Image (cartoon, rainbow, N blue to C red; front, side, top):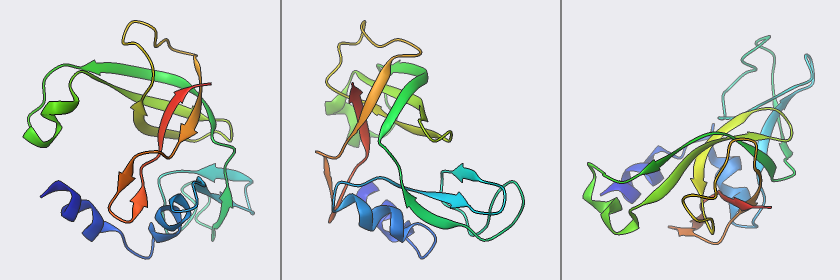
Length: 133
């Protein structure tokens, strides 16, 4: 099952991100050495290989790219069709793959401001999705 596979993959590298979603907070990593934010979680900074720390993100982003999904290969997603799969650029700089919700399919645009949403329960956590700001 998909949910079990993902929950099994939550480890010490990603747990702070997931734990923060319980409080409807988006945490990303920050490198104090090179002053760079990063997402997805890694053990060290992707730029300078220094230690990173977890910091709250604003939850504000813009749509960098998107696709409207009309066909899926995993039948667990069939009832969600069609949906918007997007790459959003967080205000802090990193990009994050997500879904755009509460938006008509023909209304999503590159550069559109969006805001984090934590309304979708995912096991004991909340999924981070985005909706128009």
